[in-house]
Length: 280
Ligand code: BTN
Image (cartoon, rainbow, N blue to C red; front, side):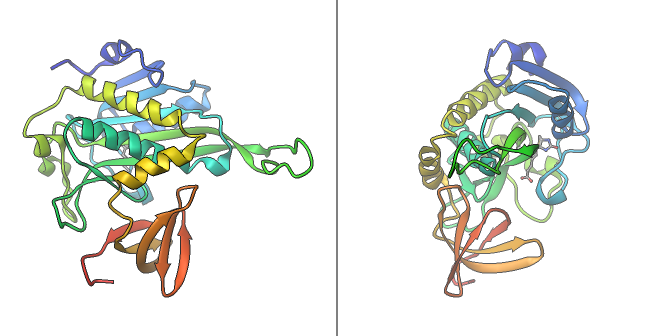
C-alpha cells in the first residue's frame, strides 16, 4: 500500500490536484479550502487531511473523520453562472459512484448527494460517502450583452468548495454514527484499499464528469441510471417543512420532482428519507 502524502498526490499529475495542500490533522478541509479560495487558489487546488477534528456535514451536522478515511475538499472554478451551481453536486455524485463501481461496490446515489450501499429490497441503505458543495458567488450581476440576453442579471460563480468524505479503511463502528447504519470500503470489500490509487481514480472520474457540466443532460442520464431515489415513496424535510410523496424524476437542472397530494413540487434542497413499501 502506498502512503497518502503530498508527494504521492502530486505524482498523480491530476488537473484536480494542480496544487496540493496535505495535512496530518486539520479542523475541516472545507474551511481550509474556503480560506485558500478567497486567497486566490486556482481551480484544481486539493486539500486533504488524514484526520479532521471538526469535519462538517450538510445541514450543520458534524462529520466524524478518523484516520483511514478519504477526507478532501477541491477548489473548483468551473466557469459557469451561479444559477447552475447545483450541477456540481450531481456531477460529483456521479463521479464518486463510478469510482465505487470501479472497486466492485454497486453504490447508489440518494438525492441529492449521498452514496449508499443497499442490499436487494432494502429501502434506506447504508451511507458510504457524503458530498458537500458550497458556492461563493460574485456580487456583481452579469451585464446584458443585448436585448433578451437570458444570462443578464444572473451572477458569476466565483468558486465551489467540493467536499467529499469517503469512508474507506475504517470499520463502521469507528464513525460513531448511532442513528443510522453506515458502510465503509473495508466493510464492503473485506479488505483495505490503497488510498493513493483510490484518490487517483476519484480525481479522474470527477474530472471526466466536470468536463460535461455544460452538457448536463449527459450527467443526468448517468445520475438516473445510478440513483436509488426515483420511483420511491419519500419523506423530504426542508427548512422545518415535511413533505411526503413519490420521487418521480429530476428536472433538467437536477431538482427533484416530487408528486404529493396531486401536485408536482420542484425541490432544490432537502433531506430525503426513503420510505418502506406502503409507508407513504
Ligand atoms: C454530508 O453527507 O453531510 C456531507 C459530508 C461531507 C464531509 C466532507 S469530509 C471532507 C470535507 N470536509 C468537511 O468538513 N466536510 C467535507
